[in-house]
Length: 383
Image (cartoon, rainbow, N blue to C red):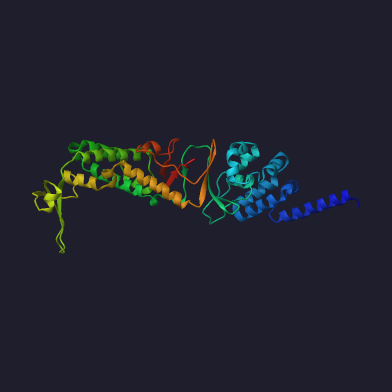
């Protein structure tokens, strides 16, 4: 038997063995088995990772592999494990995703439980594995690097977070709900419109969406429109300005008892300084019900007790950015991979609010960096 015959025989035997090996994965495409023989190590790793993922992603991709032929088969083999890391792929993302109808189609494939781009990454980056059930990240690279994948190739919007973005976790949302509750209390007293028109009108704007709609409830549900957050911020600014114009000093005294049955009492006093109060030098004018905000003193005391009204929008900005920083901490062991129309962004950071013009940075527009809807925070990668 000639060396050439022996060589061909050995080659055919190897292909038969490989075909039997891949049959265990459900591969029934002889042309694929033959074509990937030049990249056997990469294809073996690729199949092993798919099998570990399991479920629909595995079944759907095996179906795709079994259908490959001709040009698509050649493209699959050429692109298999073409890049050593996601970072290596990053500058060539647009070129690769649009290089063929097969590549673009695989990128946009959505199998149950995963999003666009994940099956594509597992193909084009050597060692990428799509997460299985119970894992808190979307893909891993060589079992080390962990990535959260977000496909926003057709949108300039901030992307939606998972559990780390649950509305209940953000202090600023709870505090804004309290501001909204204050506005609802104010508009419930029509007489305040004549007494304090600036404050009343600002509160009315917050609650101008019609009967049955509650601004406070929207904050509670984590369903906050750009219009709502803008109107509440305007109320904060106006109320803070009104507070700043008051120079009454101490003008309310509260009296409490340690004996059961004696109710707390509040009194309006002539404006006094701290030293006068400590010396007992103050004059009571009348008793006041602090729960009745139709009384001017009760109204302003209610406003002064609210942190955002008292400290201003700067305090809100700090809470928002602290919340975004806490999200970063929760994702500290992984990076965000965000597919945009113009680029593939890889980062562990999130953009923060700059300055005090929060409304222009809120929502779903191109300039927005964060938003809250469906009880989940939406954020923008810092790329």
